[in-house]
Image 1 (spheres, rainbow, N blue to C red):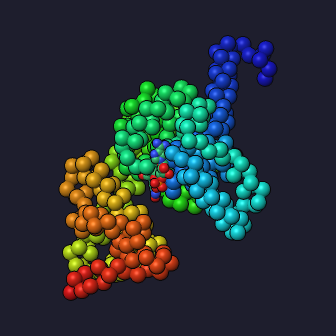
Image 2: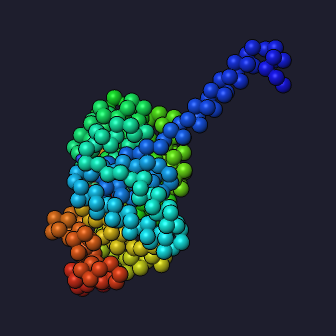
Image 3: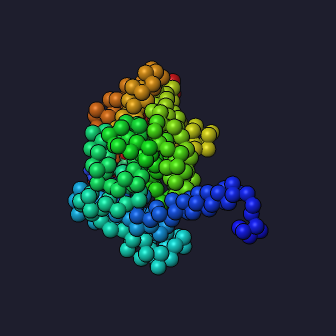
Amino acid sequence: MTVDKIQNPDIIYTLIAFVIIFAASIKTTKSMEKIAVIGSGTMGNGIAHIFAQNGRKVALIDVSEDVLMKAIATITKNLDRQIKKEQIDEETKMRTITSISTFTDMGDAVKDADLVIEAATEKLALKLDIFRQLDQKCPPSTILASNTSSISITKIASVTKRPEKVIGMHFMNPVPVMKLVEIIRGYSTSDTVTRIIMDISKEIGKVPVEVNDYPGFVSNRILMPMINEAIYTLFEGVAGVDEIDTVMKLGMAHPMGPLQLADFIGLDVCLSILHVLHDGFGNPKYAPCPLLVNMVEAGHLGIKSGTGFYDWSQGTKELIIAPRFSDSQYELN
Ligand SMILES: NC(=O)c1ccc[n+]([C@@H]2O[C@H](COP(=O)([O-])OP(=O)(O)OC[C@H]3O[C@@H](n4cnc5c(N)ncnc54)[C@H](O)[C@@H]3O)[C@@H](O)[C@H]2O)c1
């Protein structure tokens, strides 16, 4: 059927509208080519790595050249590991590394970004300051995402003039390996922005899951009470560290027990997320176990401090229970 044979102009308008909508939808996915990542630590370097590996130009921003050089060294090491596992070839490694530029000046890095993903230290005041600056320095069309594990996306969005373009992209650690991205819709995040972020997450090989913005989102709302309950179980002398983790590993097919996982995440991080849940819902079921509070105050934070529920002073290969928990008060009566 040619256009000159169509009698009804409504059909022509409908066809034109369809073509315009289709073209616009192509533009939205194609236009997400320049990505800026703020913070090049554990999460930021992994996020930069996967976007660059999937054909995006990445600007990686941190507070000093030294930190950025360490991040590039980590990305290189992780790419070498992928080559060893025959997941990528040497050419992909080179293309990935050369797609990442490093910056200590946020303004230069984000001035033409299509998407900015903030993965800086988990501090509310810092994140609000970064988003205030991003709102001024980015083009009006730029989507602003945060990788926060616990801070409200709605609160972060409230310091910008574009709350409909602010969204959570909660990647899991280690980013190049873990498939999930929890996509958090703030109170004002638009449908279009959510769709673009879901689409780009799939394009970089991840599985995005959309959730609403309430304390702990879904992942930490479920994970942290489980970890807290495991700590209470130890605190009340129901069982020891090894018994608790073994029950959950062998009985529930978890790859590691909740106490070991808490040591990996960092006990200070677990405590601060429990505070967010406790304050956000006002429900005593989220109150942190006093043993967790004591351990954080004593500086026993898990792997990062060398001791937690396990002793990590010899490295992470072997599971050695921390001396504090090998004594009898924590064993089954
Ligand atoms: N580590 C995890 O397992 C994990 C998992 C999911 C989400 N997160 C979240 O990801 C974010 C980053 O966590 P991380 O573990 O990578 O922390 P990290 O401490 O390893 O890295 C944070 C980086 O941010 C940089 N930074 C601080 N202020 C900055 C600024 N003004 N501008 C640019 N860079 C700045 C720091 O120098 C550091 O390199 C946090 O919001 C955290 O809650 C962490």
